[in-house]
Amino acid sequence: MADGRDAVGRRAFVTSAATAALLTGRAAGSAEAAEPAGSGLPPFHEVLKDELDFPLAWGTSPVRDFGAWRRAARAKVEEHLLVDRQRGVPYAPEFTGRADGDGFTRELVTVSLTRYERVRGALLTPHGTGPFPAVLLLHDHGAKFDIGKEKLVRPWYDDTRLASARAWADRYFSGRFVGDELARRGHVVLCLDAPGWGDRGPVGYDQQQALASNLFHLGSSLAGLMAREDARAAAFLAGLDRVDARRVAAAGFSMGAYRAWQTAALSDHVAAAASVCWMTGLKEMMVPGNNTLRGQSSYYMLHPGLARHLDIPDVASIAAPRPMYFLDGEHDTLFTAEGVRTAYGRMRAVWRSRHAGERLRTEVWPGLGHVFTAPMQEEVFGWLDAVLTGDRRPPG
Image (cartoon, rainbow, N blue to C red; front, side):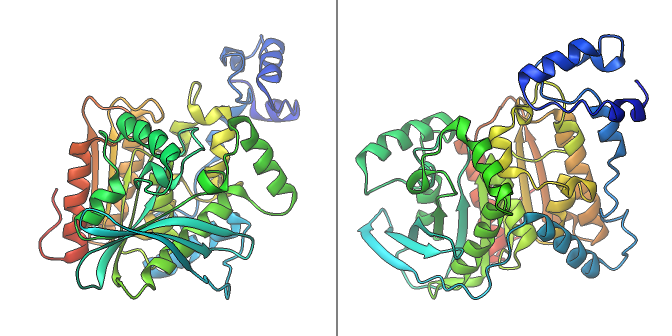
């Protein structure tokens, strides 16, 4: 490897595929020249990765009291969100579109998660007498923006979206609407559109980077906005009369999985979280060929500068020792096997340090890729029943 000072001195920052190709060509005499043209990685990326030692991680941080560490780590994450907590902003919910489902009632709810705009979501409530356990269900990215909440809750209000949603459910969820399944099983379900999806879009794939850039110019952050909204959504859900505030979980697939563990880290309203197909070590993710290197979609999950302090599993570990369930597919091309193993190992060490190893469940499903199949769903549903009711020990 070329000397790190020389690499930085060249200030050869890669800003596009074309620039990457030029830089790679110019660096033909160096070790960095092996980097594939158009990867988007700067030629000195290995130097930058070597410099990351995550000094605020539990076990590395000089803070030895776990409660104090959680507060300090959460504060550091919040500092990098660039969006404040939105204290004092009334939710002012409006409920419309009421309809009966199979054992539950459907409603549309519009709320103010921030002072900037109103957000519409689907709210499902089981028939019967509450208060009920609840799940904040967080939708994926998938570069499909015409539907957001509809990816997980069957849209009873729009036939065009229903056709699109059915195709998405067939592709990733064994043809099921996960939110409807949870409601049938006795959970209140809230699923809202993230910025750019469904009623808040659709944003185009190649507009994401401009959207994120413009928010940065305005002193804000796309990823930070989504994080704040999700935490506020958890608080709104926990505050509904129909919900048992002690039994609120967050759950999601893909980007929704990222949102689920992030919300658990940032909000004490979340008692448990299930995350399907989004967990990795940062260094293992930043490798040639990884989808993250394209930019665009990654801006929804990018808090600039946070990696100088905490690794991805370190952030998730702020939720410890609450129950958490992570599932990844063996052949998921978005996350390297090494990255998943690294992240799982770091989190297990944290939960074990709290004498709560049984509260963390981590699995790699053989033969599967980036999907949330019916058998995986059944495991998650059973786990949620266990941790939210307390009637029996969580499976696994």
